[in-house]
Image 1: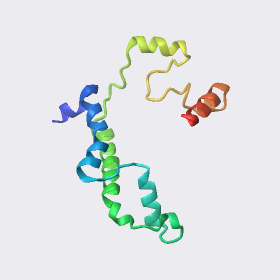
Image 2: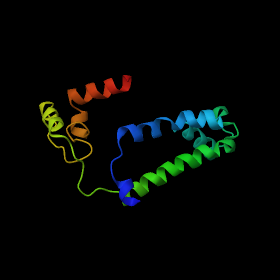
Image 3: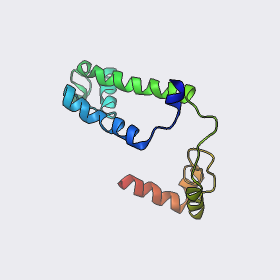
Length: 135
């Protein structure tokens, strides 16, 4: 079973499983699902009766908090037990195309040419930050 779970799943299997979770919750259980809604529930639980926006019965949404907790626990388990020591395999054509953009370190998950404090304070980093903010 672990061998099956540790292999990459095809996009046509993993995509629908992830994409149909929200509509299935809405249609089958009349449950509105959103990860960011849990921030509101956490604030309502931790800071009760201070702000009118957080004055509601957050306990009826406990299923959503449990669901997100399961996602976090599953992510920790997957990162520790299903870790691939070989690293990320990137297609040679993609490595070549990324090198034309100045991204040469393909050994990690996030290239430091884009995701670092040095690149954040450059013109390119500023454009990516502002452009990403508008998206």
